Length: 256
View 1: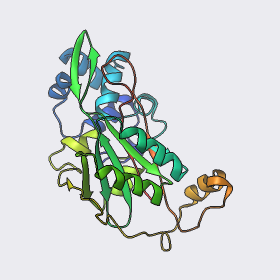
View 2: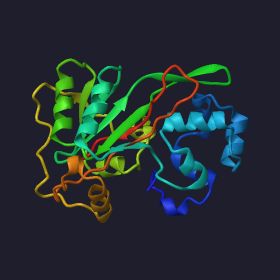
View 3: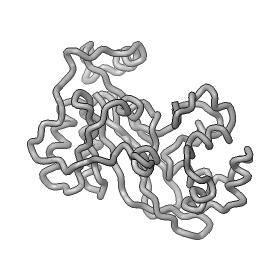
View 4: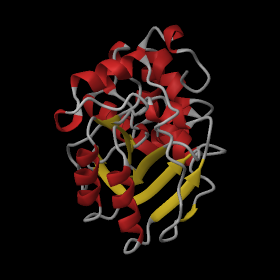
């Protein structure tokens, strides 16, 4: 489901773009992205925009250009890890930058959403936007410990309690708009996380894996060990690069 529309019913570029837009006015949206009214009108009538305009859409919405153009792959970018240490290394690098870090939880599962003010260049003009990066996958106690370590010295770490949308977020179904800019955005009731704050109860003993997750984990067992059958994870992300003052800005989530 993309903004309430079943993916299998989105059979063209224009239909997929309309699903991403949701209830927003297409011309106001296009202007905010630096795309002219004429181009927006043609685009929603089925014309494929220039690569510059397509990149602007991808950056601002964290949406996959492959999905927009061809309907293949997942709609939104998520960085997925198969190893706890990979998650730790990635978050360590994040601490060196100026990301705002959201620990998203439903009390049993955890995700990490990263945001940062940035700009990209289109038609010789700089456009401000908020890239989102979502982290998800096989990230466990080491990753959580790294996040808690960051609370001690980062003012930007936030704690957000959600429930129904967490699975969609970790499985590439939620983009920047629903996370940050919708009438009731997912990250709208966050609070500053406190040091030594309990985020959630560990669910390894009760969670079951989907068939797809079994295949993934069996193919990439961490450190040569077979994974515990109770762990469920899903991670993802996509990095948008090109002309701009910030590169590598995207959406990610961490979920286990």
